[in-house]
Image (cartoon, rainbow over all chains, first blue to last red; front, side, top):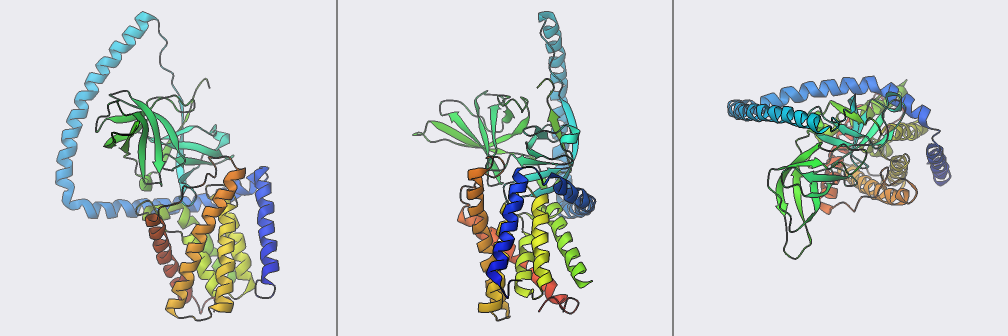
Length: 267
Length: 171
């Protein structure tokens, strides 16, 4: 093909790709896209299951020496969480009572769409492929979270049977956020798929190390209160208007198997 | 029959790239086995059917992968063309260092063309779908290239081992 008339054939192929790009922009490639994804999905599942099995066993072997110490730390943390849980339940009951007395509406319950992670792509941005699409009610802009309510990303593209989620770690991801304790607002941006930065916090506002960073709810598609991570480092310089912080997210993308897409009711 | 097995290898490389490659990510970079396969085929491919296979392969992978459709296809095809031409006309040596040099050239060219196409596509597409990266710090680009080069050597070795089996299509 290329050896006899390499340039002519090459340009013919490039022209064909450009034509397909045009078709794609018109949405005419949805059917082949869904067919490709549908055909590949069973194999992707097999690879993921095998990967999970290997990763779990390897991780167990690598960390076997630290298990005793880790177990003790987890027991302590569990007791602390139990104490907090009891206190929070009491406060929730008190909150419900006061809401009822004041005639305030109860909190809105959003619908959750359980989706299996069907693949990753980190070459052009940080994307996650999930096996639910428009047919299941997934729409562009919806939030994807873990079972523990940690924000994973926002749906960037929804096809009929699958969707692409732009991860919060991607540098094009911007999420309105608020610090849980100090209540300072800012934005959380991804950085090269590696970490998260909390930015636009005025220099005079306080940031506490280890406090949780939550979604503020200013963005309509993202409910308030989703967890983005914990402040691990504060970066502030005297001659700057804003300070920033590094946010550590506990999400382990390599082992992420399922996410929930939040379908907001009443929107 | 032989091209069928090559297509099957390409198919499983795509599945592996989507499902398992992120598990191999270090410092935010996962190896690109599709790029490794495309460059390895560009060096070893002689038979036209292999070239059409690459064309179909990258198009189908691009359909399933994230990002704007076309960026990956164009980058892969440009790399394939460049490396294939270099391997067939200018750098005909088949020693280890010559292959390594070709692989390195192909991988660097892929990252550069990917960046350029993202810039171009961002002029026409929605920002969320294909926004240009602020140019990757050299540290990460260097690491990404090295990681891709390792994947390339692994795939090239795989193809070389299967040379007898695919003798009609590969050198």
